Amino acid sequence: MSTALGHQKTNSGRAAQWELQASNRLLEALTEAQREFIRGSDTYRLFSKLLKVLLELTDSEYGFIGERLNTPEGAPYMRSHAITNIAWTDELRRMYEEKAPKLGLEFRNPNTLFGAVFTTNEIVVSNTPSTDPRRGGLPPGHPEMRSFLGLPIKSGDELVGMVGLANRPGGYDPAVIELLQPMLSTCCTIMLGWRSENQRRETEGLLRQREEELRRHHSQLEELVQIRTEKLLRTTQELERRQVQLIQSERLASLGQLVSGLAHELNNPLGYLTSNLATLTQYNAVFTRLLRLHRELQDVLGPDLSPAATEVLARIRSLQQEEDVDYLLTDVDELLHDSREGAQRVKEIIQNLRSFIRDDSGRQQLLDVNKELSTTLKVLSSELKYRCDVRCDYGEVDPILGNATQLNQVFTNLLLNASQAIAERGEIRITTTQDSGEVLVSITDTGHGMAPEVISKLFTPFFTTRAPGKGTGLGLSISQDIVSRHQGRIDVRSQPGQGSTFTVRLPAAKES
Image 1 (cartoon, rainbow, N blue to C red):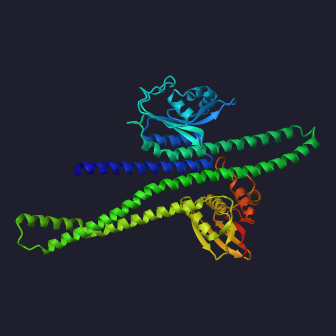
Image 2: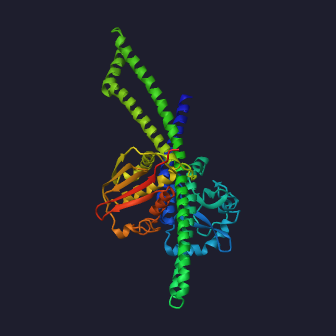
Image 3: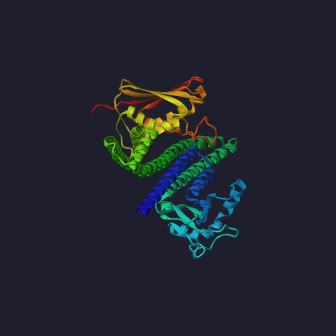
């Protein structure tokens, strides 16, 4: 009976260990996917990486990640962003997208496994497809399907896309479905974000078409061009202002959803770890007391022992000396202490993440810029520590009236820009000072610096000195807009080869 119970505990422990390892691997992949999305990576490359991780974690043979779209006539169809055994060349992608509306007929058929997910917006599991009445709809030459898991990607009640996995040994169970929930949220965020990005690009394309039209008619319609140019300028400025606000909102919502999901998911394994460490500490105390009593018993045993008892006692003493039991007892206590400190550190990181993404409702409150800078640095520590050393010189400053989430975004943009300006290992210095009725936050880097013509364009929307595809050129524009709404300003000092200093000036809160 005890042996059976031991096997159950071993199996349960292995399952918990697998779930923890799989959850950690998935969270790493989702974090990397979100970073690549923010950096503007290609969706096919991004989702292909995610799909590869899903196949590895679930031990599935093949699968796909698709997005639900509509034809110009309004008919829904599914476009694959990632699918196994197919290399997504530009030619193949164009051919597939031209045929996608026709292929979408199978996804709209509720009598197929794919169509069941597409039409019901619900999870579909089939561990016996050979006898499943919905097994139809597979195109000619499609690989054999021994088990199938279809997961809808939803935003509220709207179906945004779906994930399909096939041929996992033993089929798909609720544990696998639960494990993949954070992935569905991240895929939804990325798909919706890319839709917004495409809308922005379409808007930019429309603006370029209008500008070209003006150039073609310039010689004949100079007066009309002047009128249209003034109108176009006003329209462009308004569109850019709205685009900046839209992209800012979308990116913050995406980042907030990811960080919130990470913090939530980390809490579960952290709870197991903390609880197990506490239990192990109690067990170790019992074992320590038992060993000490055992050694006391050895010392008080008289010489009149049977030969067998004498031989066992000699073996015990030999093992104690050989394994250095005193050292082991001390080391176990230290290991448990270090593990508890590590768990507490993870808990603090989660609290910092939640503080960093707290509700951006637009309400202003009294803030300590030193505290907000510390919170931002904790969140960015993994981004900065490999590129630079950060030196902080916080002065005694008055509180300001502002929005914490928005100011954290300003500090994040400035710190990331500073680190990216450093080609090799460098330094970032942060100082806070009080200047009459203003609180000053200065961020200085030892990077490559900037020429005057670059400084003059820094806060222009979509202007960037980074390589194409490496940045949106909106970080400083958004930061300036946020600081302006806080009745402040951003000053810049820089020379080529001598680094840069960005100083944020914010009005101190007036005493009521």
